[in-house]
Image 1 (cartoon, rainbow, N blue to C red):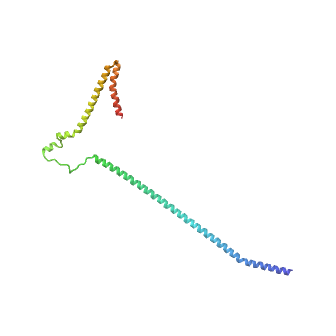
Image 2: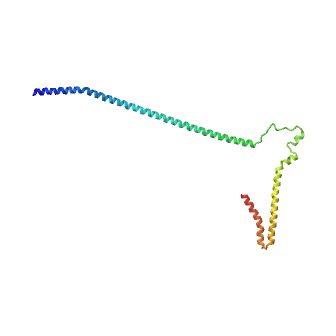
Length: 200
């Protein structure tokens, strides 16, 4: 029995050694596979990190480009505003100059004729004759005649109202106070009418 047990035990040991020997290359393969897997996983992580860094860099570049574009747009808007202000200032200056030139009489040297050099022309200077002065005062005379016609119109209305007012007072029996009120109402009415027309 001992021989058999030794034999079997030795066989078991041999089988165990054979099994250990047979498993050792597999273990080596597994270990190498594990190392390769770990190395590939680390490389993938590094590649992913590098890709993320590139994406972050690209996003930063895009943000810088957008900021530059915004600055350019703002500068263009400021330049446009400055150009518009300059144009408005130039327009105002041109208006002021045109107003000044319209107020200042223009001297045409071509139309100006020098008088002859004699003593009579030096004495007279720029004097107008009688008919020229009459012609120059024509508009003032027309205004004066219109004003005089307005005065005549007022006198005629006054005579008409005075006639009818006197007739009314003569036909009716009024006390002295009533007659006074009626007579004073005439200038008061005219004054109120003038005030109303002035307010309009």
